[in-house]
Amino acid sequence: MSTTASGKNGTWRNWGGNVSARPAREVTPASVEELAAAVREAAEDGLKVKAVGTGHSFTSIAATDGVLIRPQLLTGIRNIDREAGTVTVEAGTPLKRLNMALAREGLSLTNMGDIMEQTVSGATSTGTHGTGRESASIAAQIKRLELVTADGSVLTCSEKENPEVFAAARIGLGALGIVTAITFAVEPLFLLTAREEPMPFDKVLADFDELWAENEHFEFYWFPHTGSTNTKRNNRSAGPEQPVGQLTGWFEDEFLSNGVFQVAQWVGRAAPTTIPAIARISSRALSARTYTDIPYKVFTSPRRVRFVEMEYAVPREALVETLRELRTMVDRSGLRISFPVEVRTAPADDIALSTASGRDSAYVAVHMFRGTPYQAYFTAAERIFTAHEGRPHWGKVHTRDAQYLAQVYPRFGEFTALRDRLDPERLFQNDYLRRVLGK
Image (cartoon, rainbow, N blue to C red):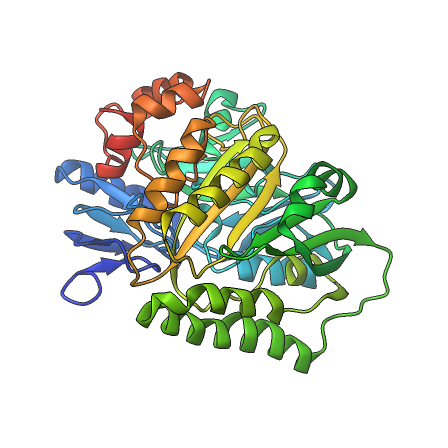
């Protein structure tokens, strides 16, 4: 087990560059036993403990001045059970490695988010999700969970074993213990046909219920200052495989979505008055396309342009109204928004602090280019989201606290009571958890 100070001058930074921390020490355990020992040692030394994955959260959910656990040696597949349709994977495994390994075995997750850089434990602990009519977040696909709790013991949970822990720990925010392994439900590899096409904003809103009902996975991006959106529908397909050509793929995914987009962001940051014109060009740059491929190649795409993000889940029936209010606010505000607004959906699930807990949900994500002032836009957007009883994504910028969250999560008290039982001394506490879960 290696113990080191962190980064430059011992400082850890997240991917978005908006959070930093200076842990007293960093530990990279090579086994569950070493991790458990590190937890016990931290408790003896009176230090708090946090595990951090790839730092893709925009909140300080993983920040600590105590012991920072890095799980990069806890990676790989422990076991594939084809009969049960499950895969058990170590907590530090990046989603990318899991997806590629599963595909080689002829298997796949049912649904996933739109990037795959995160570790499996970081992604599930913060409630990472994609879009789906019936298929929910990555955490909702968990069948069993193993975690090291505050006393250094290893606890496993599932629907049958410690079910009350299972109900909460699948999206545990790092508050209940440190996840060491996850068992996911998987299914035989399948094909998805993606249909991407521009559509007027007003038409998407008018037809939203149909678009949602007719597609297994529907999402769209709206370009503020324009009446344009780019829609994406993913549905299962009998084939044949027709992946995006290499040249087309490079042009649309790398050159337009990352390269040109990056330059447009630089121009917009330097000269905000140009943003509406850039938005109109951006919204027309991506043409319609259809392709068929294995799931992770359809669900996920590279994101090289760095940004800061806020995302809220509102009840699905409140989505259209929420978006109309967001458009009115942007039009009246004089704000210049250079990043598209992303809209996705998820069915209700049974996880205590899932953003879709107990209600069919729609997600609205607002972004700003890294290095541009985002507070005014996010504050105004948050006011709209919270008026609709919005639930903030645990890993994205928001200003909510326990008092607000207890009102929008019917099972909030169930989670905090379990935390009192599993971590009475608050070994896994940090400033963020103090704010969102209460003292």
